[in-house]
Length: 323
Ligand SMILES: Nc1nc2c(ncn2[C@@H]2O[C@H](COP(=O)(O)OP(=O)(O)OP(=O)(O)O)[C@@H](O)[C@H]2O)c(=O)[nH]1
Image 1 (cartoon, rainbow, N blue to C red):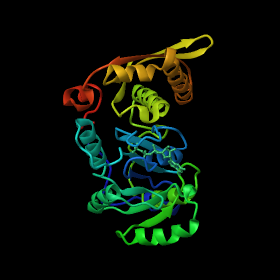
Image 2 (image 1 turned 180 degrees about the vertical axis):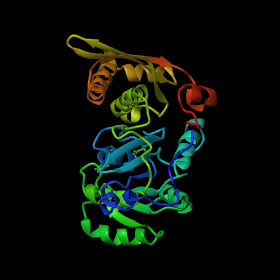
Image 3 (image 1 turned 120 degrees about the vertical axis):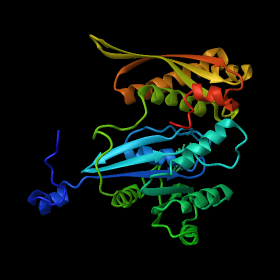
């Protein structure tokens, strides 16, 4: 079949001034980068107006690259939340996380580089060197300003940060309290170029419901255990079953929490199963909100030694560099 469309001569329709305002479609990719624990996932969740990425006080909570999609008034902004870039690359899991963070910068239209209040350390410097290599505007978001007690220190610090590279803008924000996020979002969407939308208007992420469910369980484990548990915990979804019942939809989810050692299993389970119960209750509540359904959640803990430094085991658990 041949096409009738003449690409040489624009039609009157294409010149309509009304169209140029209301119908020009825009789509762009915006990476949120920074060292671990600066608040990247908290920022993404606020920008999307919905929880998507998991957060915790523990650094290195985010392991995978997650797309968060927002389509509003013809503008589709595809946010790329990345694992925090960090120096230590001893284990395969850390190498995976750094690679996921670096590869996120390819094909990006703008970068939001998040730093924490008044500090600047070697890891921030490392991230700076990576973003300098990307040929797109970089907005520096100085997060957690709500925690600065002596506000007079902020302005001089912002000025000194401004000199580190030719930033598009330097914005003090509080991702948790929503401070300056409207201004930040306006700056971001102004940088979104013209282009056709890559996702349907109502799509929020590129990740599956199974993936999001597993991440919610992992978040609760990390929040419950604080510093008691090293990073070596991952979650596998064994069952994800949707049923329509007379009383409403029911989602049955069975998840396996994998740890590295028997001692860690005991920690996750807690005294008479109390911790695992709390993890289950908290995860179920979030899942019911996320999936808009009643959820029955079954949790088990299993020891799978050495998974975090075994390339093949990582692949089987979804840590695939090609994803
Ligand atoms: N006071 C305050 N705390 C914040 C703010 N933003 C994030 N946090 C907290 O900082 C911690 C880390 O936030 P995350 O959003 O998980 O940070 P991240 O950069 O995604 O972390 P990684 O997954 O390690 O890369 C959490 O306990 C957040 O609640 C903020 O604006 N103010």
